[in-house]
Length: 112
Length: 116
Image (spheres, rainbow over the protein chains, first blue to last red):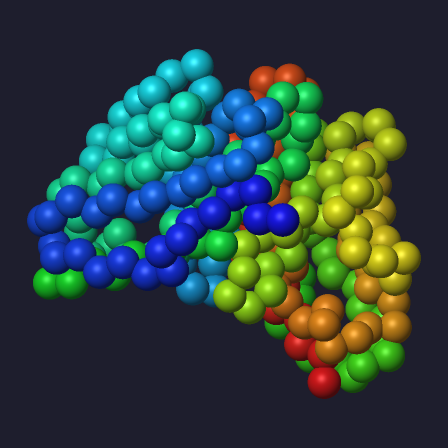
């Protein structure tokens, strides 16, 4: 049972445009969400997070939006840069739990 | 920088052999996690250590898998009698605390395990 879903395995965007990566979840007990970025042969690196009590969190070019009623979150990157090309994972914590549940990832390619 | 260190970075072994993977967490991080990523899939939780508490082993896929941690330092993940389906990247992560305050986990670069 995939509790965190990233339905787009890949996304291609032109440099300077907005990248929007989507994530859906099924477990209503999830109350904290994170996005990780992963380059080949490296471990995931933390990018941005959001608590379920908020609907938006912004950090520089990165903004995460959370729609609790739809059980949906998205990561916006603007403007996109070639160095943003990587696999992006959505992940979630549950209250009282410490393990992260990850989505399957979206490969973002930012083209010149 | 003193990030999470994993060794070996790559391991190729024959089916049926035992393997041991090592993780050195960030100094001072009390929580340590092991995950597995199979080809084309997301990260799958295996086991979690928090200080001196009993580890959360709920993600270990079979009794062939075990892990130990010495205090708040090094951890080893052992896979006995390896099978081809054990082929994956094994990732270790640590965080300052695993208590009620959520802390992002910091990952090592993983060990790529290939079972022939």
